[in-house]
Image 1 (cartoon, rainbow, N blue to C red):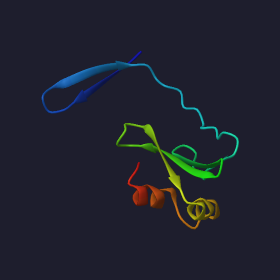
Image 2 (image 1 turned 30 degrees about the vertical axis):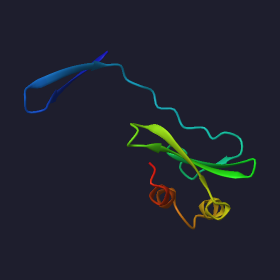
Image 3 (image 1 turned 90 degrees about the vertical axis):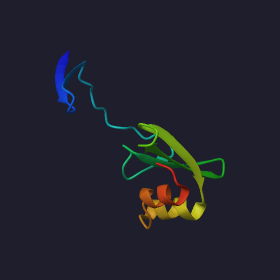
Length: 91
C-alpha cells in the first residue's frame, strides 16, 4: 500500500492506494487502430463502428456508427480519431 499526500489549500489529505499494473491494449479480431490505448474501429455486419475512451465519462467508452468513407479515411490516415470525436461530439 502506497501513501500519497495532496495539499488542496485546506490542509493535507492523505490517500492510500495500491499501484496498478499497465497492460498494453489488445485489439480484437477485425479491429483497427493506430493508437488502441484510446480508439479503435471495426466493420460489423455492414456497419462501421468507432469506439473511444471518454474523459467526460471518466475513462468510460463511447461508441458511434461512422460512414464507410470515414472508416476508410481512418485506415489511410487521412483523418484522425480526434476528427471523428469532434464531428460526433463524443470523447
